[in-house]
Image (cartoon, rainbow over all chains, first blue to last red; front, side, top):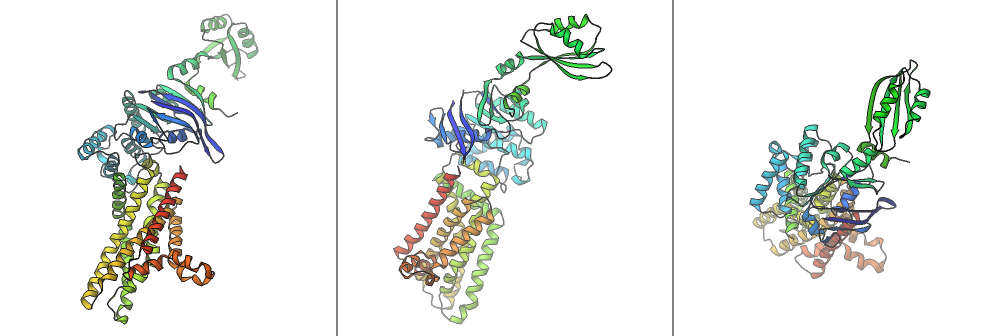
Length: 312
Length: 234
């Protein structure tokens, strides 16, 4: 559906997006993740034709972005970050204007706006001025704007920012519903959002793609290296270290906290997917330590994200 | 072109849902009406020459005030991004906004038709120069709208857009009155640049192709530079 090749964008001498490549298939929900200033918004702006790339090509269906911009714009619905709408207009007037620009005739406009009112919950605000709306309501009007023609590709820049938890759940529901038939690209820095809605994740850091994989694969790869967290009483670190060094498969023993009265918390890094819980339990049983907590921690998307994007 | 008309429609309506239109039109009518009629009866002549001779100066103030928001506001709020990602081209946006501005100037001029009608009751009014004057006013208005649009596209700050637009319009209006600052060889060229000079010709009722071409070229240069600025911004 969308094919991006060597996409690069410079602002004067600052490189915002550096030679990125990716493909998006029809019916995929792609999450674009990255820390602030990583180049998410710039990438999306180039995909929608708002910014011209410094170099590289974007192909949407069979259209090249720099030759058939108008056709591509017709296929896309775009919601920019924080949904900047015309302040002085009424919600209805605004949606009607967008529908006109999208080339819909009167009966189409009215029936489509009615559908969107139900979908986005705009019932009570249709005749209010946009500058009176709260952030969440504003965002919903923006979503209605993006979905006006039921576009094949929906691009959403931080769609749930500023919404309350109920609204977030609603918007995610809408996105998932749309994502069954349409292609959706959304950028965010909320990880749970990606986990809840996306099929595929692209992580961007400093203008470069650092990970691009299906959600399950990324989680699986993340789960391979895992940690075991132990809390012991009546033990000292030296002793514990000796005992566990003898267990095969434990890569690293870390002391997290140790108090005077023999309370010790440690973290064991296990080598592979092998489950060492049984061995560890048996090791502890042979000693006089009192086990107060025993928990396995798998690496979450959050840890993956932090590892891939941390400053160094 | 259809898209441009839709944009024009929206922009034009926008003027009248906010107080801007009413304020600008009231001030325009007050200022022109006052200056015209305070001296009108001294001359004892049934013509609109004084009204039209004031118009370039009032327009250089008023039109940038009307056009300053057309791009600056959108750039400031960010709605420009939403507009530009709808299926429209730069040219659609540009013509839409330009037409809305010209339409507004025309609407502001309509109430002043009351002046020639009143005068026609008082004396023998020659309608030729009046018609020429209105044609010239719309042409000059359009040229200033193009300049104002250019100023507005430069910045997201409306006040800066107003001041830049006003400066350019003001210079165009007054340049032929400052000819004594320039060397003799340049006099012809610089005199030709003055909007006031060309407007005066038309408002005498002489429609010379040179004057029309002058205004059309100002419009073209204004719009083309705006187009360049828009392209450069993205």
